[in-house]
Image (cartoon, rainbow, N blue to C red):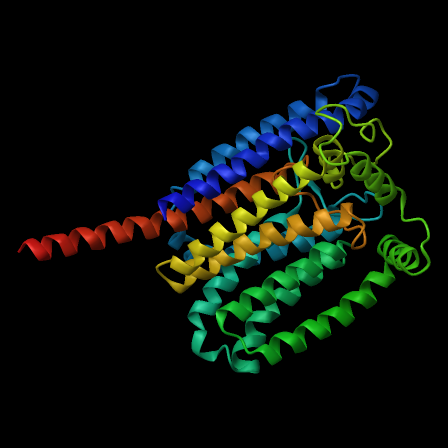
Length: 375
């Protein structure tokens, strides 16, 4: 388990180092144009990476069992923040997702994802015998998912809300919920999500544009079009670090949601595959940690964190590749960001602690067995 902890830690660490390089390349032209400094966004991202690594190390030493005691008040706190966001968050591109405190801006939806994983893990462990029953077990847990995902969706942040539902249903299924309850809830949420998505202009436009381009071969939106041009121009080995053309203001949000296109352009197909494999290694290591965790709470918490990182990564890559509609979700550990990056590092720290805790327990058991054998 110590080896798994090291693999997870250094996997995330390497992805963040790569992110620093790609953010520098993807943001330099925009930084020069917007802030009259090539390094403005890079410097901001660099300090966030440093803070993220510090948090990752700190949380790897915090016993994960402690989160059980605070899951319910943390859940109420997150719901309050999500409600508050609806009233005080400034409207940016048709959505209000950020709370600004002058010196600090953060996106409550990122915090809600981690707290929801923790709270569901606690509830599944506590109500394990009742989880097979719909009203007394499954719906009691899924109610929290509806509340959190619903508040995220109406910001509007439809893609994040939908992924919260997918993540939660996966966690409930692993926890022992019946498949018919999972499928029924998924279908109901899919229908509700589609209706809500079509109510908001920006999400409706993205969906209809995607469907139209898929059916009739029409033009995708400008971001996807430029992202595909970037990925295509990278060929097998890429154009070289710092040589991206799409980062010269051709691709909007080149350093954020669509950074994978810059990565693919500069590192080529081979580099893109290697980065994708890093996420796969993180997923496999996290699943092994979940499998070997000493208690059900640890198992569910490890699975939830691992699955959330992986699914957000592959959805981002799918968006940049034009496979799914544009979502506005960052690429974990690599995209420019603050709240998302730091909370990802906190999540990895928790995952590392689960692995280390199990390793310590095994060592203690082995010592006791050795002493008993000598006696």
